Image: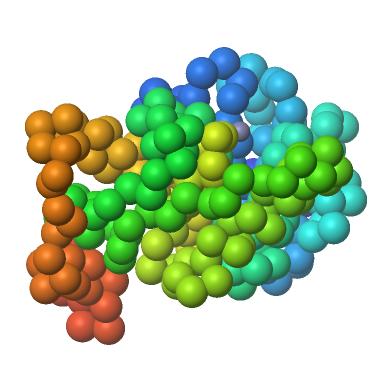
Length: 234
Ligand SMILES: [Zn+2]
């Protein structure tokens, strides 16, 4: 069996989405990539999570050709592949229809950064894609969803904002590995929920100031990050 360790990681990330309440039935999917081998490992299509085993995951190349696996890959595979090609630093992708993030996606509204929870993970508002055109839906729909995501990041750093809302659909998130991609999906849902309540309390709530935003993001992610433990201190 190819990539046994990555199989465990990808399965675990998919199960994490379920444990955190982000996934109903078989909605949602997470994938991981071996950049070295140029192989992608993704959840199979339509298999219940509680029955999923590492060997059920499907390995494809970057063109979506199955390299190992008896089951069909998740139908969203082409979206994942576009993201892996466009965002060279990412090692994992997660997609859910989690309730609050999907509500923002359906409203076609970017999630403003109202506070430090958001600022810790996303260095700006979480963008929403443009709606797909009729012909984009009719042909190569999942691939075109990927292109719409990439277009939404034309002037936005996909490493600094590792998530997006696909208009009228739901969120995709990513990270340096599949565990981080799933973690970012969980945080995105929490942030989407809080932003929803913030606007319920004050429709005119304004985004966090740049200074506080930078402070929180950069203390975790910047070159001079100091949040958490250093490797030596662990
Ligand atoms: Zn979906």
